[in-house]
Image (cartoon, rainbow, N blue to C red; front, side, top):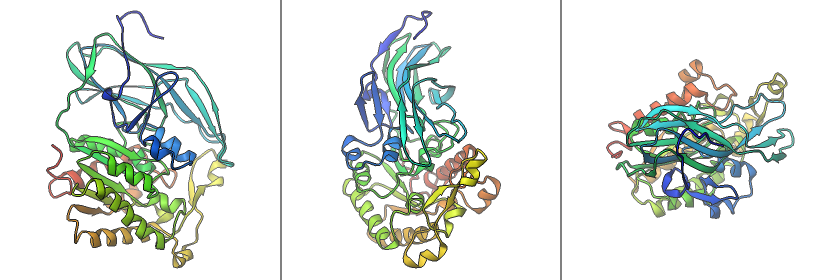
Length: 395
C-alpha cells in the first residue's frame, strides 16, 4: 500500500484522534465513524438515515506531529445512481495549523448502487485505498484531515514518518448543529466548505455537525442525542425535510417542535439555542410535498426535484415552508418568555430571493458550492458577530 521512502509509524485510529464523531464502530478492517450513536440508530430502520449518519460530515482526524508525510488507508463507499451523472469521488481536506494545505481523494472502495425508481440498493465490496500527503513542514504542528462529508468512510490505518499524539484542546467552544442535507453539505466543494464548517471556522468554534441528509424530521432519538452531547452552542435548522417527505400536518408539527426543544433543554437548560427556519426554496414555499425526482430532467441526464403537493392542501394542514417559518417564529416567541437563551433566525436571511436570482438551486432543492460559502459567511455574521445569539461565546 505505502511507499518505502519514509520510515513509517502506524498509529491506531482511536476516539482521541477524531473530532465530530459521536461513536466509533469497530469493523473487520478498521473503524467506522458514526454521527448518531447505536442506541439512536436502533430506533429507526430508514436506510436513508443510516446512509446519512454514516457519512462523516464535519468529522476530522486531528493530531500533533512533526511528520512531513501522512498516509491514511480508507475504504470509502461510492454511490452510483443508474441513469444519473456519475458522482465525483469524495474529497479529503488537509489543514496544517488551521490553514488549508492540500486536498485528495481515495479511489476504489465499496459501491452502493441505488435504483431511484424502486428505492432498492445493491452493495459491491471493493478494495481499500490510500490517501497521501507529503511535503508537510518539518516542525511540530496541528494536522487535521477532514473526511469526505458525503462519502461513508471506513478508517483502516494511519501512517506517518514521525510520532503522532492527540492535539491539545485550544479552548474553543463546541458548536452542535442539526439540520437537513443542506447542513450535511449537499453540493459543497469539500468537507471544510460545507456552510457549517465555513461558519465554524469564521466563528472560531469546534463543530459537531449533525446535519443529516433527509433526516431532519424532529425524531425523538435525535433530540436525545442533542440533549446528551456536550456543547456550548446549539443550532437547529428545521423544516425542509418535513415538507419534502410530507411527514406530518400542522397539528403534529407544533407539538413536535415543542417536544424536540423540551428534550434538548433537559440536557442544556441555559445553552444558547438558535432555531433556524428554512432557506428559500421556491418549489416548496407555498406548495406542499412530497418532493420527487423530476423524470423530465432525469431523461436529459440531470437531477432535479419537483413538488408533488397541491397548494390547496394547505387548508387541510399540509406543511409548506411559509407555514413552517410562521409557526417556528411563533413557537420561539412564545417560549422566549421563559427561555431568554432561545433565539430564532429566518433562513431567508441566509439565502433569500436576491440570492436565488444570483445563485439558483441547481436541482431546485440544494445549494451549490458558491452558495454554501455564502450561507456560511452569513451565518457567522448573524450568529457569531456582535449582537448575534452566539456573540462573545466563541472562546
